[in-house]
Image (cartoon, rainbow, N blue to C red):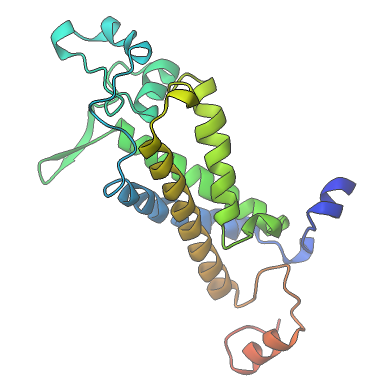
Amino acid sequence: MKFIERYFPTTDPQRRRYGLASLIGLVAGIVSSFVKWGAEFPLPPRSPADMWMEGCVNETLIRAAENIDCSRNFLNPPYVFLRDWIGLSDPNAPIYTFAGHVFNYVGFTHIFLSIFIAVSYCVVVEAIPFFKLWQGLLAGALAQIGIHMISLPLMGLTPPLSELPTYEWISEIIGHLIWFWSIEIIRRDLRNRWTREPDPEIPLKNRFTREAIDEGLLSSS
């Protein structure tokens, strides 16, 4: 605890709003999942031309040979996670269709992960504002390291880092930074609006806060 207090100053427990942070994280997680998704359209992280034979071994157990696709584009991390760790025989099975397009379990996992990460982020920064550094870009960089550079290869959801193409690195790095930036923008705006107070590490009695209270933008309580 002393290490955390020394290098990662914490906020006043009386001003933390964990319940509200969780609710905001839910909203931010849903919205930012579309942001992360959208970033992959101009910068696709995987190509249909990239084959991953090691990740394709289990496909022979659930599909006929003529239906097997060993490309990285098909064997994306959510798909492999659902197949190998959750045990779904067909992660691409439709949950529902909209305008003739299928929304499957891979898409659901994408949104669920975004919600989980956003809620965790919003709750953590209530106590340790350090992780909001650079408007959430620090957290985005840490997520890139923790998820795509450590967790996914260790779990067998991607090939080794040395085998990843340059365009996947570019797409994922930019995507993670934009993803967390959008989470932080939503978090800060909704928290300040709903509480009518600044973030808990900002003193309520500083000059800028007093001016905001005088203008009716923040509550004096």
